[in-house]
Length: 172
View 1 (cartoon, one colour):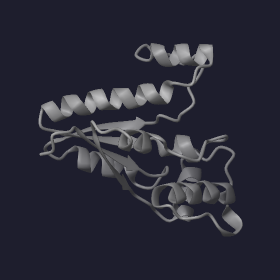
View 2 (view 1 turned 180 degrees about the vertical axis):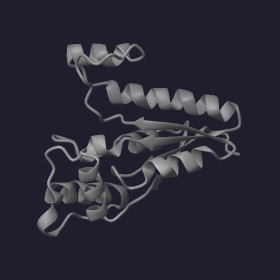
View 3 (view 1 turned 90 degrees about the vertical axis):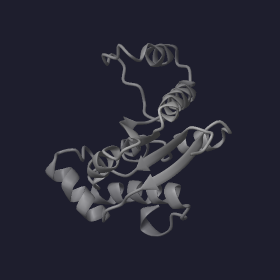
View 4 (view 1 turned 135 degrees about the horizontal axis):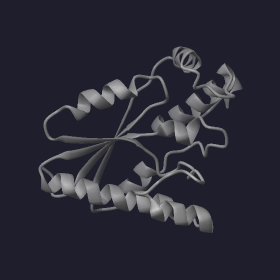
């Protein structure tokens, strides 16, 4: 076992099987799993968030240090897991960063964690054919104002972020 706490970030887009992967991997011995994490999600005004007073303050005051707070919280949880012989598995809420309207088109948590020398950060991501994912979004009425084309653009941005491919063609 490493001397540093370890975190594995599971990234995926909506309706690609992420819940199944999270539950399966989270059931393994020595793994502690948390789901729907995002350092880049926009705070929601007026949302009941008794465990997130700092986020609510940041929203009210217009400060931009919430991503740093999330990173610090992940380190704290990963350290606790490490002390107890476990690896932290975080299922990122990647659709916050790529699919929602006005999304930044990036996940910054992995880069923030990898820039630190006090934690090991690994990435795991899953994909499903974008048309099948979009069809599932429509079936579940989660597609909002997205068309297949805008979803494909968001999916391409997600892939570009994960594996460093350059967005080319009609879906950039």
